[in-house]
Image: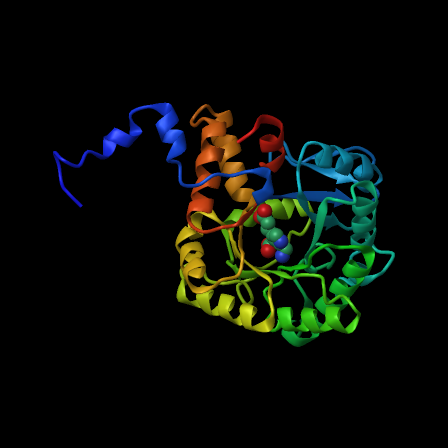
Length: 323
Ligand code: PBG
């Protein structure tokens, strides 16, 4: 490589078309999964104050909403249920007539080509808000993964295109794979929330999903200051049979994303979480940053770091306005 003045890297930035031609990464609707919140026994859409532009969709309006989402060009949705039937273990989530199964059926009926991915967890369905069975004050790993497998089979039977376990239990991918295969759903892929950190950036989500909990999730979600451990989690999930790995949140963990990218051949997803969304929305509303440019820059950075797929609440804005 020659050096200045022979080398002048600005030559290739001299005009806009050239800059377009040389852009290394791009984001399209084929990369995006749109997370939505669906509440049972709700009359009108309920705005989520901590996430401007996001609302809880009443279950009775879900079919119409999903048709609109699909018509806008969104290819995939992630479903979060806001339950009125919570119990100690979150059993509504594996009831074939429960909210999770109903949401999946409604979506698949309304838009058969839309990829429907229910979040596979319990925190939206338990009275205590933890992601599993609580025994002696702790979340019990091995009982929880049995229930995760139950939930996954019910979701697959309802028509789910993919299962996305987010509970951060050890062995959850293997348990779900065995459950799905045993029930005849060997063709349903698993997108594993492999490196899910105990993050402050989930704050707005917990209000949106009604999964506020006393305490924290530090015994199952990862310490934000650990990077190697995230690689271990990813390696374990790959070995257990995950089809897609995920890093969550996205922006504060781009180093993790790029290191996982370097170590696996599997597709990789990243979740731009509620707090990342809220930061951009509120900063833009205050006039501090330009929203569209910030969305472009953050999603582009997540792609650049190695994500094939991005879960983002901005998906609908992008469908309407372009990237
Ligand atoms: C459920 C779950 C959470 C999120 C996705 N799935 C919350 C949590 O773990 O506390 C967060 C998503 C977001 O903040 O946008 N386990």
